[in-house]
Image 1 (cartoon, rainbow, N blue to C red):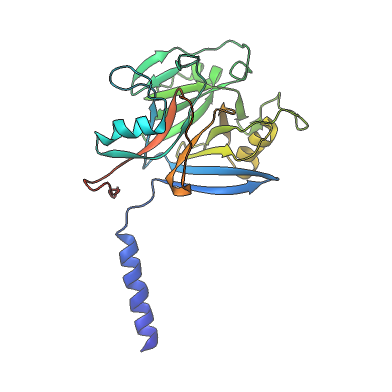
Image 2 (cartoon, rainbow, N blue to C red; image 1 turned 180 degrees about the vertical axis):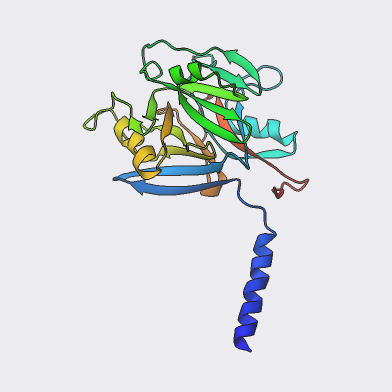
Length: 258
């Protein structure tokens, strides 16, 4: 009789959990090779990934809170967000930027100063049901059309290889954030370091720990994360492009089930 009651209780618990909305993004704090990271994973086939830069009036939003205000009018909220590529002083994108089919900045294929120009750099491309990181020249040749896209650099991992200019004994250490994608475009993993790391260590996280064939650097000390699951929403000066996962909410602000 006790076993039957236990089984019935477990079944009731399963029914209750089954009725809860699934998390749009799974975030966790994790350590790897002596460094600490916040890592957020998204299924691009089931979740709504978006890029954000300007509001309807053309003003740069620049803060997670500003994006939340815009989404509130749509009955939606940010489940996760992070800065998504380098920008000029006026917050306009340095390289390719496409948002919901509208291109603001063209693809930049030449080498140049700074991390963006440390070629090969790359493009984070959103399409229906998938997201991919492409090396810039490969992207240009592919003819792929992205619903939304942001260019940044350098590439961290290129077809399973670390960027050729990364040095294991480098002394250049910063807070860093970036994104990696699986070959099928479904698994998208964002990471931000919680301590200062080298490019080599950061690229190795994506290749050797997260097992992702391609990964792209977004930026350094300006990097910020909005991850309610971790109790974190970093504030500070205005950002340029931002990538986020959007979820619908009901009139009381509770998440709606997908």
